[in-house]
Length: 546
Image (cartoon, rainbow, N blue to C red):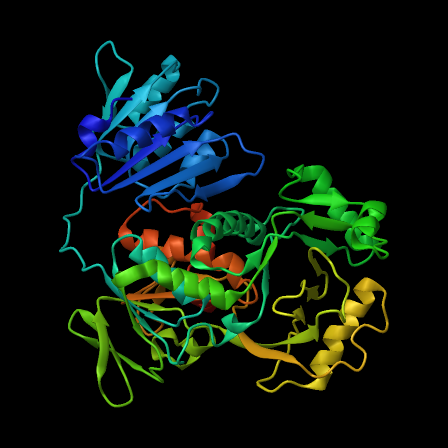
């Protein structure tokens, strides 16, 4: 595994390890990288791991220039879902993996990529040779000789971006880009960050579960695990939060049966998700929980504004801030996008523009055609002492947090109207749900109308939008996502609904990796499921069928 001799030639060096094991090889490689003055600017280590949780998992590291991705899947399936260009490959412990992986490696290997192998079968060696790897005589080492035509490299794009919106989506985008050495200009219409949907007193973060482990569940798992590690990493910058756990009650006996089936079929580690039958759930809650509950021990509440502030602080001098900018116009001038205020002043110009302004994207012509809705959410605040003292977040049809700043947060409503004012009807609905969950018909009786109204940005499939924005006016046949025409240099981080604290860190990491030409932190089918062009593609396909 002496790859250091070749990594000084590349700005990004990407290693694939077929068996992570105890991580010793990664630690050895990391030590060599740290101590080599000729090291590449960025090191990406991707490894197959035996983890209780399936899928891809990006593990935040001390150095922003290092990424570690652990893939829990069969070798061939993991490689087929990987988006990366591999510079070095270490194959060991793969004798039982068949030969299908060889074709996938041939598609992923960079020209000149070095492959080290141990204990391959003859058929595996032949399959790799057929895929383009030239074996050195008498050695378990090969070099990839590309058979693909190589596109000429275009002029490098300046690493400078404009980010619109200083909520969770925008703040995370700024931090992830600045961590990669980008210069970022942040445009926020309000005088402070987190003034819209990210302005609630407390939000919760927890995974989603499903019997079929669908796309939403897989994304939720990857994003939740990444977010928890990410918040730990930036928590020194004053994030107000508590990893107190979340107790999610089953709705009824039928719902409980489905949850039991999930628990039996998935065997989640208890520190990730543990199913509690009624006696254990009741004891933990201190009131009847007749249908049982999920306990997410790593679940947490976070004050979103503090998270936004911490992420922006972490950007340092690489971030230029324009708060109180009001409504801006976005205009393409030459190779750059310009953000222009109401007085005609150009606040910023850059070749990359990121829309992370939630429901505000509806007023941006570049986002025309995206099926985003603004959904009203009213959170009710109860004074500390007027709700049970629970050491965790409680949720079912609604949620109840421990007291934060002397106030419990509960709700939030899902209303199909644009009323920005607090109203008694939504408060009553919130209280009714919590009363049912706790079996306390007097909870919040005569409580004053306190709380906050925000508007969530929601897509029809409830999945976020991450990536290049489509141009719906461009002509041409569209059969696949890669065929969809895009607005040059325009990207979106939108549609986080009520899950911004879970989605935001990994979504920003995904977009930053795309912009920086790095390995992506999610499976290819999940990346496609988040592509903002997915709606236009479906629309065109329906039109062709019709």
